[in-house]
Length: 579
View 1: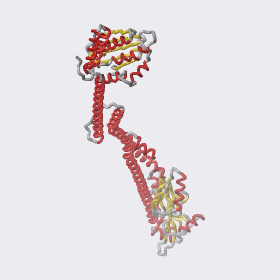
View 2: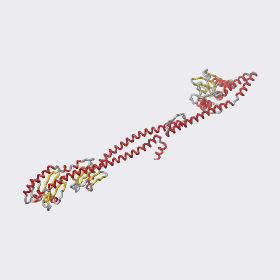
View 3: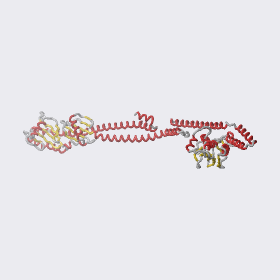
View 4: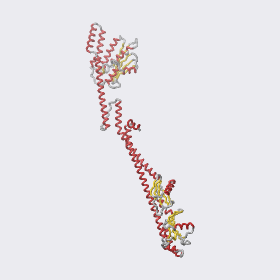
């Protein structure tokens, strides 16, 4: 967790931080809302299931009570026939009157009920006042089972409901017509079980189970669950618990009705796995909606984070470029938020750095110019010219022509070198400077130095920095010619050409061989005095960062050591024009 927090606060990009922050702020409430919605839907489904079960129980119980009430009314009506009761009471004395009563009123009534009531299957009357069966419905108890049954039922004065051999019976004692309430018979009606119990199977909900039990917890009718083991367990718990009302366990929901009119009880139960199927649908729909919302939110977060982070990433890119030294980049915005303020402040900082660097660059140019002027000022021009002029004329008067010529060359050399204090000269003046210098060197080398010039006539009046080539020529002699093999004549070749927009000067010598790597090292290494490195720096000062301008060293095609100076026709700096 600490690593994650450290990554979030320190290493994660701003866009990743935005995405993660938005995702947490939006996804967590959405997930909580989704879970809450699922729980509410689940609770509503359970409550709806409970209400549906209770309603179905109420409907079934009402239908069964209607059937029970109708049969109770029928059996009461049949057992309360006064004329029949009187004739049955005196049957042992006047059987004919009983037969007549049966034929005239009782049996027609029985046949009417039997044909009009679809639940009524058969009617029988048992009485010990007769010895043989009379008519279609009246008979004495003959078998032991009938005698036992008759003796048991004549003791009860209410309608008794029984379920035997998958058949439903209702029986009621018939009392004499006197007020002594003496039992004289028992009427027993057999009901059509399928019709009577039809309400149990008319309502079906979630593959529910339903059971109708008598007072002794015997099953009158039932519809089982698909899970046989669970159905068996529910019935076992029903027999152990006689309480009515709603009960819920981890496996099922059950509603027990109040006792029906005949003392029986109805049980309606549902397997919770059936409810889970609907809950699973709710779960899938809720999860799908949450997933779609999260997908849309993440897409929007990605777009928003990209928009918000793009300006910061752009600012980061410019900062990295500036750190590499690219201070010329432009980054401005009209936005006034915090990022806009930082962007404009950053640009202002870069502008100030550029300004300071330009100022420092100009100061460096001025400093170098002053150093060059100071170097040239070490020689007092007027004093030097006067001395050289006096020496020249004295040599002429003394017929010392060679001394006069050398003095004249020396004066010419210093005149072109000092250039009246100006930093810019012409190509022609610069070439004259090195001509004079080389003539002087030829005198000092006693004729062992051969100099060749190959000069183009084009561009001689073009401008270039003053005193640029002489140090290269001097290095060619001091570090090249003077170190040549003994017995070999020294040779210097000076070439000048105008190629396109560039002035090309080549100074060659036949001194010791010099590799390209050694030449490059000499050009990049500052030395004492005014050497090759200073020549390269002066070219950069006057011609800027043009990679084609500069001084380059190595071996020429003829095997001689060659230093090449390449200059643009047009100079970058504004200098005073040469005469």
